[in-house]
Image (cartoon, rainbow over all chains, first blue to last red; front, side, top):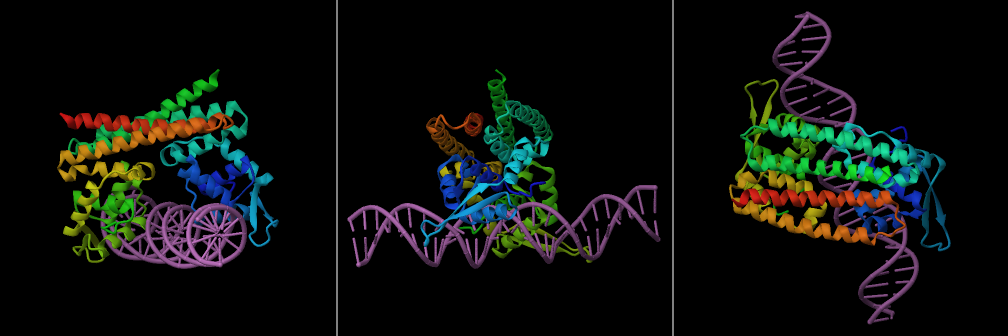
Length: 181
Length: 181
DNA sequence: AAAAACATGTAAGCTGTTACATGATTGG
DNA sequence: CCAATCATGTAACAGCTTACATGTTTTT
């Protein structure tokens, strides 16, 4: 928010540019061939996102003119971009993030290596675990309060949601254990 | 596709109108207070979706003029709407659905009671289970092929995805068992 | 040298979010 | 009777998907 980046895709791109400078086309290829695809990178999303980041001076592009007729613009993060990225990585984990933006949380975690700070990663996982478990509690309540009139499939669908959050909690616990040593 | 409904929200609304006739405002309240919220119902989405369904003659609205100054339009499905709804419920479960549209699959399942056909529901779960397990296999491969250079957090994030799909598969197996008796 | 494939990017249109507008009802 | 809250809906704008456009390299 302070950074002005409003979409998950924006952070995904910023993170990928921290691995190495890339062009819009490079990013497209990456999104097509890796699990990052879930954060979605159609051309009509990537190029505007790059422009917006550039306008905010979080990344800067250099045109590679070695092939003058088919130019290619390679982007890399600026100082400000790196600062925004790191402060995103360090941001707290709230209840709302867990309920409405889990995917973004996973993305954040995936980039945590750029922090080089195991304590920050542990804190992230602890917060994530706490909020997730608390949300599981709430979902269980909702299930209980669902009238007996609700058809079984409806209740089962909610159970599916509960199982997913339980799986996330288990994953967080296991990952924490790995970093605990 | 044959039905012309292009969004998950469209099906969610159609399904809710099969429970009982409702106005746009009723739907908003429902989305705000139930787990359906995840299929997202802001006013600016619901009202256009209702108009579109009405234009396609899948639902029809009747204006309640008992309070002439603050009218209220109540929608119910048409014959064609019910047909489209049921054919959506019966549609097959493909690999792509599991990878890109799991949420919509869950919604479909939640409405399966309207089919009143346990065999169809079992088929749905069997297909879902098969495709999910196959996708877990693919994700495992991707994890194996991830270079050792990939930072641990990146690999863990993928593991999280794998655990989620494994949880879905377990859920499907358990639900199948319930219907098997 | 024509066709296919790769590399790079733009544009139109649909969906959804946020913020607002306006009429009715109820509590102090 | 004024303020708050409920009920109902519209309008502006941002983001994404799909389809296309255009230049370059490789294959046949």
